[in-house]
Length: 550
Image (cartoon, rainbow, N blue to C red; front, top):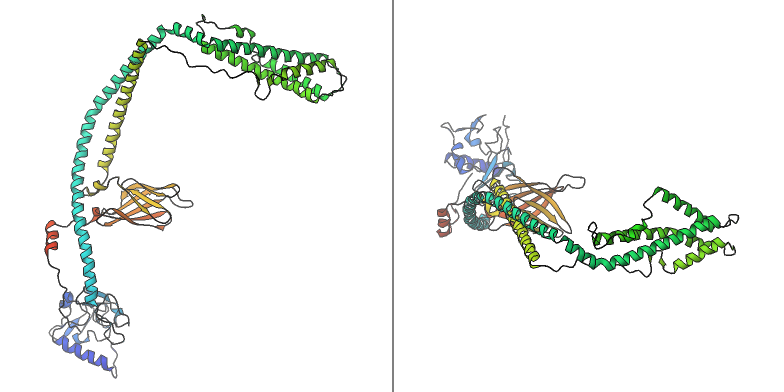
């Protein structure tokens, strides 16, 4: 129940008197928007019902600085209830509503540029609506220009999308029609290559003996030299083997020279190895194998065989020489055992021409096998050219077949991509945009991949879906996993602009990036006649009509 006051402050008494007078004159209560005028009229008996229907009060109780209605609708112009809304007329700008709790709170609210919310004199709030309205109009004009330009560009995008989609469908049909012929071309080219290869093989088979004889003549000096080296290696190996055997059999076993005993023990181990490895000593007969008349082995194979056998023997020489060299270096020189002295003499003799590190004789230089000499006949040349051309034709046919296959797959992918309800984003399909901050360069290829580059490239995600129904937000997911965090992802939010450009990149959550992109593709589509009228119309003046409200 409303409390009875003994007296009222002077300004409140005056306000109530004016409120009653103006309410009777049919004027709106303070804080009520003109659009709600029909809600604030009294009945024939001068009473008014709360907007929530909870109570009926005298119309004079509206804005009496006492909250009668539960919904606060009786105090739109005071802060008594604090739950309603106060309407700022803002003549010269745009009207707005603020919470009634902010009325006469000693703060000039920017939403009320006319200062009407602070009428009790606690603070002076100048009416700046003309200035604010002018700035707002300039901003609206700027935005309108962007929207108009963006609308024109988006319409071009739409036309492009419809056109390119039709062209892609036609191209796929044409390419699919070519695939059968391309497959036939590839098979034909492969058959021709096989035929040409067979002709080359027949030619070489027919001239095999002549070419083999020529190769024998070409490699004969190398085979002869390598055979000499093998013979000398076998001779040296046998010499070392015989020396160690005589040392083992004849040295004085009563004199305990550790160097001599070590050499003998090593030779025993070597002999044991020979018993287990029958291939350790290549047959001496191989030295004489292979002649120009021998069709069972080629000159190259013969040279390789003799070289391999030589290398086996050289390794054996290295093992035997190491035993004798160790003894010759460490044996007791005061011990005049004839077997030991004989072994040392042989070791010194071999050492003059032996490189133990390289396991080769010092005077032997590397034998380089030359390329096979070829006096190409006109027939051979023609066959090779035919084979090369057949191979080239096959390569071209296979490349064209693969190119068409890749193109069909790429076009199919693009056709299956959701490019917006009007195909707007066909213009931007696979286009890439960069944004560079202090440390990183970020990039996104629409409907493709998003990356972060610095010294290395980090994969932020691949296009996965549109977010919402407005075709202005995309999600790129499945990026490189963060350390101790989720897989990286990108939310791409688009806004209207006259160019395609990334405005900013941020990271609201760990490894979840926010890209803001401006593009004509999301600008509102304005009718052409509206754009033309807007361009031709003179600048509208702001509403300057004054409202005197309670």
